[in-house]
Every structure is written in structure tokens, then in C-alpha cells.
Image (cartoon, rainbow, N blue to C red; front, side):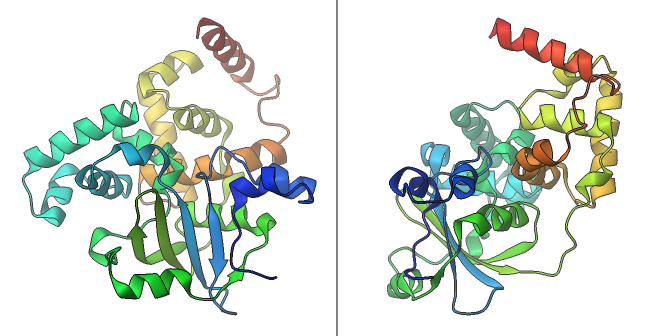
Amino acid sequence: MQGALAWVKTAASDSPSLPVLARRLSSPSSAPAHLRMERLGVDSRLVRVSFSLGPLRALSPCELEVARWANEGHANPAIASLRQTSIHTVARHMANLLAKLRIGARLDLATIPELSAWAPPCLQIPANDGASHAWLSAESLAIDPQEVLSLWREMAAGQWVALSSIDTAALTHVMLRRVSAAPAPWAALRTRERHVLDLVARRFAQKVIAIKLGLAPSTVSAALRSARSRLGFTSFGRLVRAYCAVREVLDETSPGFGDPSLPGATQERTLLRGQTARE
């Protein structure tokens, strides 16, 4: 592989010779814009990722930091302790960032792909540091476009750990290392859990999901808890983030999902069609 760039989003439109499969994989809803991955030397465990901040550009640096900690499952008191500020300040930042991102709950942060790969603020390299330029321009190998989404899904599932990061005016650059972690057993999801997760990934509130599926709100919460436990995720945010990254693959590889013979599938599809028509 020649060159150090593997721009995925732009490759779909700028490279007509790109294989059809690679073009299809290059623009999923679960990956951020201008996604680029580079393997550092021959070590397959170290990857440098660059991507656009997308909607996160609307946030102030403090709000972005709070969003990142919240996306990792930290509650407001823990974020206040990490940032050495008051809980009231964190709550204000949280309210502002939810409004700017036009989402209704902090769990919806997990549906924003630009928050999938990041390094804690204490590990960030200043963008004006001379060492950062060498870090960004170091010689590396481009990753095959067909590998990019597979790696991104692993990152969203927590199978990579961030070592350092740089936020520039419009891009985030993260250095990640693969860690030993078993892949999530998505095939173990039950039908109800899959239906609930699918609607959570579309940013429906749990009360709305209960109405759509004809379930009690407590049943929706129980389905989320059982899915998190069954798949081995430590927080709901990580579960939803990983599901958003693999949802399109599950749709293609699970032809039985959504079949009219499955309990609740016809009802959900009818309700979703009605919702779409109203919108």
C-alpha cells in the first residue's frame, strides 16, 4: 500500500476506480465524516485515526470535554471531580451541549460517531506543540478502505484504547492501541432487545419506545439492562455506541430480523411507518 492517506468519505466520490464494496462501506451513517486511518509501521496494534469533529464543532472546549466524559459513562459528580469544577458548572455545560447538539438525553451522545474514539483530556497533546507536528506527519501505511469500518466498529466497541489525541480547528486526531477484548456476541441478542436497541439508536426516548412496541417502560429498561449484561458492556452508552457502529452489518447478516413472523415485528414496522408519515 502506497501513501499515508486513506480518506474514506472522500474516496467514495473522488476515486471512481474504488471497488463497489469499498464505495458502499465508505459512507455508513455510523462513521464520522473525513474518516482516515493509518497503521503505524508494521505494528497492527497501533493505528492513527483522524476525522471531522462534525456537529461537535458547535461546542465550546469545555462542553466538548464534558460530552466526552459523559459519553464514557461518567455522571456529573464524577465529571466535576475530573475537571476540578463544581457540579453546577458541569450541569450547565451538559444542558448547553445537549441543546446545541439537538439531542434530548445524555444517552443520545452515544449515537454521535465523532465521540466514539477519543483520549481523555489529560492525555491530549497541545496542538501548538512542536512534537505534535512530527506525530501527525510521521510516515505510516494506509489501511485498506475495506478494513476501515471493521476497525471503527472495534473502536466503538471498546477494543481499542486511546493513547493520545489532538483537536485542531476542524479535525480530531487520535492514536489508538488494540487491547485484548473479546468481540461482542451480537448474535446472542434477543428479538425484543434488538428492537429496543434499534429505536434507541434512532434517538427515541424510552417512553416513546414503550408506546411504539406496546411494552411497559419498565420492560424497555429491562431489555436494555439484559442486552448490556448479555453482551458484556459496562455502560449503556458503550452498548448503544457499539450497536450504532454495527447496526448496518446486523441488518445485512440477520435476514430474519424484522420478519413478520417474529413477535412484535409487524407492530413495530407499522408504528414506524406511521411515525415517518407524520414527520
